[in-house]
Picture (tube, rainbow, N blue to C red):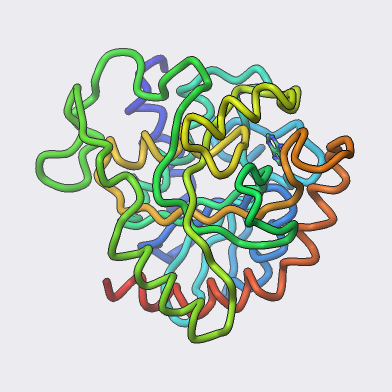
Length: 282
Ligand code: ADE
């Protein structure tokens, strides 16, 4: 079965055979944020290994389960772990789960990640709402023949598609209002994606700052491109797990990324729990 659409349909049919919940909101949890999946009620947890054609993460901290159930009464599909291009996966594999979330019935997507802070006003452990991104990974997730059957709304899944409002203004405003209500600092920022797996050099970070980037990471943009190709509304949230190279006089390591995920968990969880019903109503 080589056709991407057929593979996505096949995976979707398998997932539907495991649960009667029809999710309307997809959530992709980044490094260190996976515990949020425990918030799902009436949960059916499906290991990625059981889902036909689903890629499997090779990174510590990405557990690899699709958890379907409800949060605040809203049917959700939560990806606990994602795969990255730096693991050696091709673009259609990296974004296959996003295609499947759309096929399952999701119309909005919350993408989250652990990112390095380039903007010096950010603090380690802080949350940032993405206003836009810069894709410097050197590739594009929508490469290859266009597949119009992926359209979830009229006019979507065109060969060339708009990215001028990749991160929904409506969802960003909801996030801002809710964060203010809860007393959570939530600046907005531009996420710049690199391929990885090496972290950046200080000279690269200086260059990225000049380009207008506030955050740097190795994920998210591909999923967002595919979500927009299909017509999903996207909210992007970054957790600043470390300051990018050269911002502080210290080396960057993956353990730190995981540690700050745990520290931010309470804020991240309460913000998302309150936002989910609002996103469904938006
Ligand atoms: N993820 C967390 N910190 C990062 C950094 N500095 N660069 C790329 N990805 C990251």
